[in-house]
Image 1 (cartoon, one colour):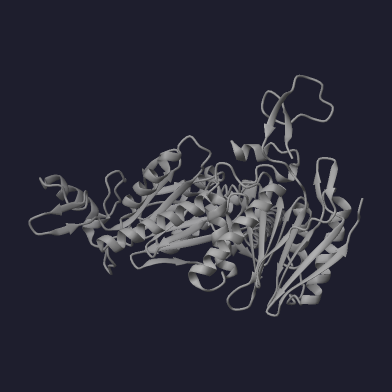
Image 2: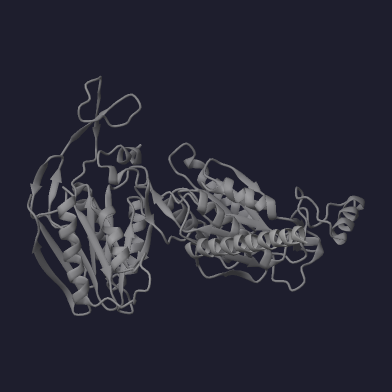
Length: 237
Length: 307
């Protein structure tokens, strides 16, 4: 959807009750909200996202999940501008098919991450406004999470939150999964059940405090047996 | 234009999300007979006030004898380093030898030049070792034009010898003697700073990034020709630690790379939070000592008066 932005003299956004002169400019981007989270375990990976699609003060859809299945071992979560999310996933699907036809095998998670980095950087001066997180299994069967910024800088993590509520969720994950900022705590490895429960709790908290997150939660659990999907309701207000 | 559009976005969380690792990689080129280059950097990548990644890698190896530190936009630095590695590898395959650090710096500067004026932001220092592996560094190889000379007697005699010699010494320039067909390449440690606005500088000491003024102050106070490897590493680490303490955009951990004629080696990543507490402990110990000494002096004075 087209959006006009209201700019002042110095190019900064105006406040809500501003009454002076305004410059209306067309912006090719729009912010559709949503939060994505990924956690990597010993032999599993979890990618979860909420399903709310919003714009400004309106909600366009309550059933628009942001996780997309790429291969049997990889799921990508994209949040930001929905138009760019759709196009980007189409481009990734096409490139996956091309790779499969030329190399006679599926792309691994690490290869998809490297490819996505170059796809995003190819649009360095008119970026895809998408925050991507890839979750999947690497060649050894261990969980892998790759997080990206809109222009393609990426690295492999154990856990990452992206999207509108990322600044709220990331410190909570740092504490619960990374055991940061705690003294004298036993570092237990994360089991799949505990990870799924943690993801659900964390999204319930995010839905409480972030207006763009809510409606429902879609969890994709990637293991060597395939991808399992689960839907959990969240606050609808 | 476009990333500014993202910046101007209403939602404050998503403003200007280009990872600006405003780090301050610190490099030091040794002039002592023991030749090495040290590169140290912090590990914080920030994005408009949010720490996007507390454990990023700002020192990227380009090949076995060349390491590049990165500052500026994460994606730009990562991609351009990758392109540089590819070009250097192609050069090595075509010409049978590694390209020197000066050549790599020139290549990077020329690759970035078409993007001058755009929002590309790369400030890299290339730290490397040119030439082959050596046990005893040849004396011819360790002089460069603009560096201050050490107090080592052999290098002074070398400068004199150069003055007397009518032909430029092989250390000064790369000569291709067509008669012998032998190539004389300057060998030894080398340090170049390349920036996306076109700057390309050679030097012995660089500090780059938002915390660089703090790092410079520590380095300028401690650096001297003739430092040993351990002293140089601890100085670089101290510089990064002080800069992370004072600069908001630097922090978390410190990475140290050490480059010699045998290639680069990496020290384990070190958490600087522990260093802060250790320093506080040391301060507390010193204050206690001072207090005890003062009490001892006062006791002595009072007992002296009594007598």
